[in-house]
Length: 173
Image 1 (cartoon, rainbow, N blue to C red):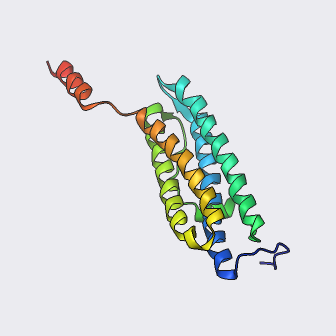
Image 2: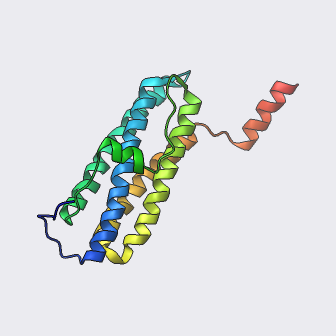
Image 3: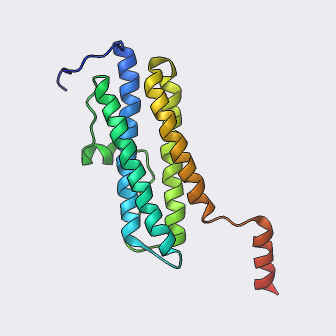
């Protein structure tokens, strides 16, 4: 690693904590983009027309937040690393299988990946509280939007209990 040409008002420990949080966010979001596109190209099933554009929206949101996190890292003198090998080694996502994937499985897998990214973001929010409130604020905003998307992805595969009971009664009797 080379010495940074960018100076910051953060002390070395604050910079380390914020930089670690931002780097984790960058790799998670890059992988989320890749997962969303893999799903976008391979989703099949009766809900294809609804899921296909929603995956593009997720990729667009993740791409925007990746840039914001990487630029914040740069602003505090930390060089972000978004190389494929780094993303593969360090992302906290759950991944996505190869090949055609049913719409229901896509929804569950995207929701699981969003949950994994959100969990790491929440840990980063906590760790940056004292070290760098500006970075914390950025991570809070990213988390809020991803939690909204997480809710929307989960809602696609959920049925109220009464509806499941009624469906079960119809199938049995």
